[in-house]
Image 1: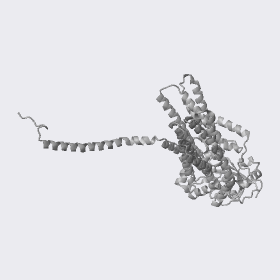
Image 2: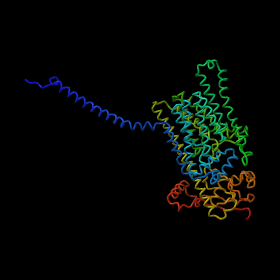
Image 3: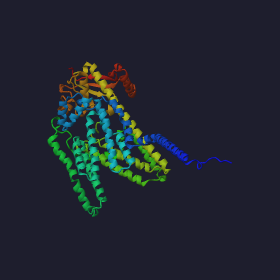
Image 4: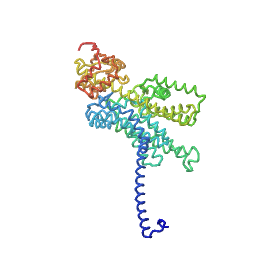
Length: 587
């Protein structure tokens, strides 16, 4: 009986050839399988890689910031406040005026931006704003804040309803200098951690460069506080003998190493006195330091009254206050069955403390020149650029305390509720900024209508005027400044022979003659009223909204559509109607 041949029965050379062939085939097969496996692995991880990218804090921060501030590009040709003085100004004029103000580089900055095009102001404001919050995120990271805290704080800085004045082109350099200031803080912190003197001195140079925006000088106290904190932390962690000897040597060590920090503002004051001294129309009583006790007490009251900036929120402070009080009452009446988290409450109180300090430093620039800080209008907060940082810490601290007393539940569910609540808050703030930009866009339409009316009304040309604006289309009821009306008049007529004043501003200074005597030094080519007859009072015009029954937001949308699709059909002057002129005497 025959049996099948097995591998053992085959000749050795045939068996070896078959093994070699099988080995070769298996080798190629494994290579192919490995290739397929790598390919499938890449396919499987392509989507997760994208998810990882989207989870990057910097990208999330940019998306939220962009969602809030992209509408600024609707205002790429708009002008507000003193922007009309900038518009069309020559290089010599810009350099002369800002040299008198003690900031010659700002004059060159405005000239460079306007050479590229007015749209660059909106683009620059958008980019600078994001870079500021991004560097702020890096500062928090270098100070060992948790990832969620630094992301939350940075988002709040970017979207909280403060410092609307960033929209004005005249304030664009302020954002540039603020970016330099926060970047210098970041370099300073890194230098302290690395004990790198070169980086430390470089940060001091950056600080002094940023001081050309004078409102940042009082905020330099923050750097001193940071220096004391970092040195104390470093000395406590050190194994050197002096750090283990008690408080006296640590204090001497801190004083010795922070001495140069305290000298920086004085060094810059000397440089400013000789190189950037104010002159001309800015020489006398223009933001002169005048600290008053009443202003200091007012600042303290505002800090404790406005830990959350209710007055800045467009939706209305009464509604927001009602929601806030209702939330507090709900937490109070459910506190008996609450599972409190002490560590979170402690963290919240710490954040509020930091926020109060930053709010005080942010308002200090105004207090030092005898003004009362306020959140209510975009005009009065144009220099208080540190307020968003203080408000962010205070808001997150209060939010943490509220979330710490949520009723006891599953930790995952608690976390989802916290994230959803914070996301809802951010969504409200983003929508708030849409309304802010929409309100400024309505103001832009009002300006277009006013210039169009001047262009088509002979009585408004070459005549001094007083405007009582009852259209309700001003941005947050901010009274139009001298530069705005003069700029509108010049854009409509090409002449500088009329002085147009806002009614409320005029009566605040005792009438026509009082206003002229108070601000006469500012009249001239810079304000575009150099040929006006200042001694002749203006005729009064009362402005109403044309088609008063129509919703202003629906008009804004239709106006935008018509301007973009059929610009020849858009007639701006239909937006306003004028009562007057009411003159004291014929001219």
